[in-house]
Length: 410
Image (tube, rainbow, N blue to C red; front, side):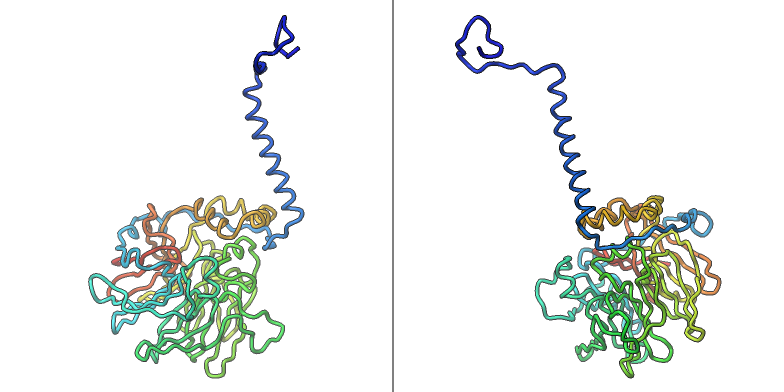
């Protein structure tokens, strides 16, 4: 007899089985439990059998300084004017020819642009690329072959544009003759040390008074597109290099640095933005010593540049948060995150949870004191990687992520 049929052995239709009390509510719970259990098993298997691309260590930075005194919010940065909006993608660094009022910047697509800055509406005059490859769209896959121009400066004597590409090496562009030449390639060996690791992630540079070029290498382990791995691992994989164009000699000035980023030479001293430690270092070529100019910055410094008054403009690419130290104390979790997620996904999460707050500091190179700060609490102008004066009373702002340049009247 069918279950539920009384007084008859013949079933004329499907038996209607009513759910037991609580069964309707328990089924979704069972599904959720099964999903959670499956995820837990997947995570456990990943942890056991998949190696992490990083080897993270525990660390802790000091509590970020309070926004008071010279760091008090003021909203000045929010008044910046956007220029070339939606015409440039990731103008990381800016070089300025003050004689001709032309700007130069490198984009995530690998293009290096010459910009007419004289007009009220700046416009791109022309652009060059260091490779002849197609499909250079700034994507994760294309960056290695197409290059990523980062640091750039005009030579103080020849006025030629020097460009440091994270992947392709150091180049010189003569805009008058439209000729490009390479000084050294990416992944080049250190001249005087056969045991040293070849270059991997070139970042920024400046000219020394004797004609040599000082260069920051953010990492010997990861490249630019995987920069988030370098920050999460938090090991001293960075170096300060020096290149002599007269004999093509490349050597190491200082190593074991935590993501050295921007570099600026002021009166013979070399200042380095050590992004991984949220501080500015001072290297003395004569004594070959490294000192801390300023520690415990409220964010992560990028391309530092000298102001007209001799001080340093220090753009903060991102602010520090309470969650940073929480994650810093958990290297196993950081290893696991990089096992489960791609670098693009990890970076997207980091951008999503980070505060959109624009901040640029001015720091005295003698005392290491913050003398001025420019804020955009709303984050309209944020993710700033370069702050440089244009000679007309304005501060120009670049970004590795934005689709515009910004100009602020000082």
